[in-house]
Length: 136
Image 1 (cartoon, rainbow, N blue to C red):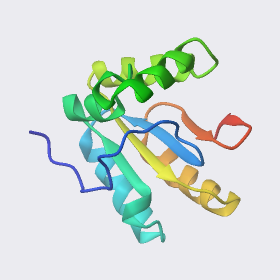
Image 2: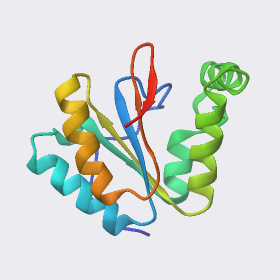
Image 3: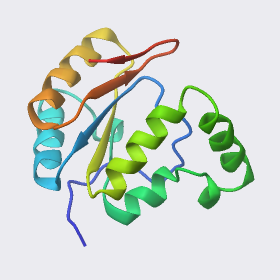
Image 4: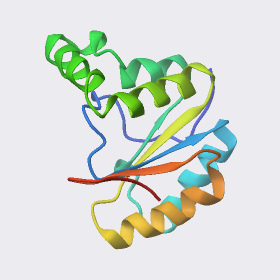
């Protein structure tokens, strides 16, 4: 089993609203990002990591592990604009990468978190706002 810095988790992620989402090649860089986020005032409860098969199960890309409501939501997401992100993140996870989500509901948190994640993540960093999805 891969060890990661403990983060909040367990619940189905319906949508990453007001979250930064970053992809990492391994747990070492992911843990460095988590450490720096916490040092800069992000609460541990606002940080979620998804690693390996357990992370794939938690993100539940088809919704089947979290019941019929989750399954229906993922179906509608798969035929809408969210499809691109779901497919991208599932591919990254299946290729062995890790995903980190950071709750950042305010502009200042978004900018600070994005700056920290940019130092450690290897792929794009995406912010999911209320009406806008943007690469940061």
